[in-house]
Length: 596
Image 1: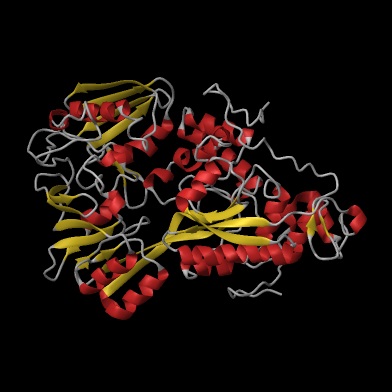
Image 2: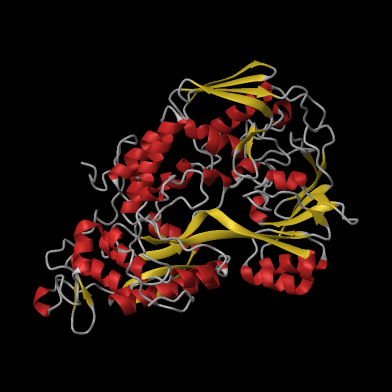
């Protein structure tokens, strides 16, 4: 039977045969219970020990995350016969333990941030490269170590065409998907609210009404006596005038500083300070045509020399600005006032899509040099903040406020002021929206949406849509039982994705049945779902299919319902605890010698 309600654990086996492959399908089709290896005491190997599911605490939505993790632990315990408990961990604690391969938990629920930089596959995927696995402090939060996957990631970094790069990325995503990495659960929905009695918002596009959608900011008009767009923002996003020491770079880029190119409301590259651009020599030569007559906020002309200095400054200080990746620059040349040429020593396709829209907000060279940026890039002080975007700064206080007004001589016409205020908690921001001191609430939750609709009625417009990332159950790959594919696939089949979608999205998202790091709206998701492995046959649990996956691989249960490994299963961790990468920085790591 099946049931679409969040509380149902109904079984639907109709479509699962394809996920098992020919051998597994034959086993499932002929199964009548027990058997399949290890149904009696004589056939059982070592008992699978209790495991821990880590749950993020101290973050937005922590309660929903804990509920979801408890569901995962309950299903592992009750369906698979492996005792599982949930442990709350602060974000930095969880990361530190994972990055050092501490092996203190087997699973955790998470998702990739909805940063514009993650629209590029390099930023989305490269943390899972094998060189980041092991106890090295690198951000492979699952210690995933697959040679083929990593090879494809390296190849996409130097692909000579978009078509070839897409081929490598698809192959990498397919490899990870076949490994059931990650266990995708449901789409992540983004939700924001604006007061329609104060703002007239135009087409917000796929990106929605967020601070990372510059076209939403430019095209929204204050009405009915309102003279400004007034939005909440995380205080950490306005920590310093040196905006490039922050990730993401909003709310500075696209407002105060105009990048050469930006991401439009539908995530596409669009002309910014550069009115046009060309790519030649297999993604090694990039040429930008700077807009003629464009000026900074002090009236001085913006030229290719300013854009060159900006790129040189960022590259020279890539180690200081830890969030900025290094690229193989050969030369950056201001050919004339309106022509900028960037040469790379090898193909670098991700530079155009991952770096330029986020970090290339053009800085006034003379102003930043006079402020001492070249000597001490982290401590730059200005009498006046001078930018290149459609808004100029009229008030700035670290972590508190970034208030802007239109710069009249910009090629983009904006209406009214734009004010970002730092709020450390969502309830304070909600009350500010209800009182009218804010008219945009970014990144709201379902509970907050309901509270605001009850308070403001039809004066509030809630915009909710699927983002380009998904909620995922992430497994540790260095030790048993989560290092085994069949165990990960079995866990996937136990989960009620309708229930999890209700926890995370209030039911507004979409359950996902195929494993993929790239969400359904991600521009680099494979064009055909056939490239991705189906890891659940429906949003509802299929407990029999989950058990059959393990039976087919030789696992079994004792008389107490406890799961045991196959008798001959090698339970040796994939690499010794505390292993670090090879000494050669350009080679695959010895974690240890996985790639031979």
